[in-house]
Image 1 (cartoon, one colour):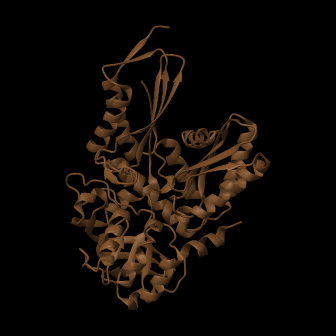
Image 2: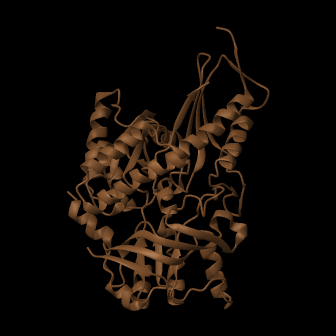
Image 3: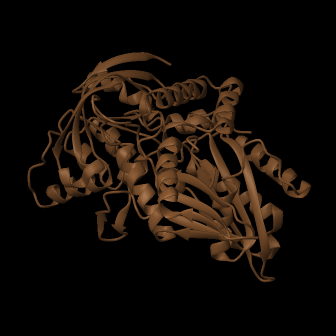
Length: 282
Length: 183
């Protein structure tokens, strides 16, 4: 296989465009899941919330306004083929240049504080949170996933005991969803990471949010667990915006990794109903 | 559940009528403030200094809007999660604040301060930010411009659709609504 060149400027340009598109337009899988939730919700208050969410999505798309004022930190997943050669600039610089341009030109909110304790807004929503994986081949795949603070704040990691098992996972997820109530803007999507180390587990939970809503886990064991967890989460009665109802989550997605014999890490990353993500292959 | 149209500043007689779950269409002036602005306001109270905005009878909306595109009154402007303002809200309620707009449940300290001062907590629909911006007809920064999205803005709202999330009698739409659908 020969080396394929990708210009840094091209990466910046596409990231800028995707930051804007992601914040203005929901992808089809999310839009369809929200429409289904509106149709199936039994609570009157919940249905009104879903009606507003759908009207909002329409306005945002038509008028190129952010779906949510919290346009998030720019989380960028990248699968970089090892035969790709990036030219004309640094890879991370190119992504940050794209974020800077997208958030400025798109009138998106800048929510990035330069220092977590002492504050100071960076003014352009950089730096992006970049998750890079090196893979065989010459493709460059890139997901732009703006992530808001409200749902991120309701995410958790637990270093459970191996003895806690599947029941422990269920209790961890359901207890946290109940405690979160309306805070993360339900109906939510729940990404669950199981296994790995402390930090890998949290990464898996985030990665699980990228899966298409309605897709089935390739492993029938986890497909069944996802289905059971979705049922349990919806049985909490939290409902749209926590006002009570049948639809608390649109989906539960699980990602797993091998673990240490002594450890049983479980993480849940919560995404609000404005589940924004855009994908491109360069 | 009843439906009301209210105009700011809010009066005790109106607030007392409101029950958790009621719908309210709000018109008038509301001030925006979130984490950083609340900290500054409470610091001023601690120092015995005057606040940069009127509080008596007023409504504070927990929002950090996206930047205003050309030709619009404001960018997208949905509510942020309210519990982060719980450490500060009772101080402002004791100074005469009558209404808060946000999303998600409040703690006991806020509930007590709402009862003590006859105040109401409204929920707006989180993530319906482009839709809500249509209810905002004017916006100007009136304090803490250096905070950017977190600056205090004076908003003029017209028919802002809200739900009474927690009333001045201590009832809570979250608990009552969720109980009904819990299995």
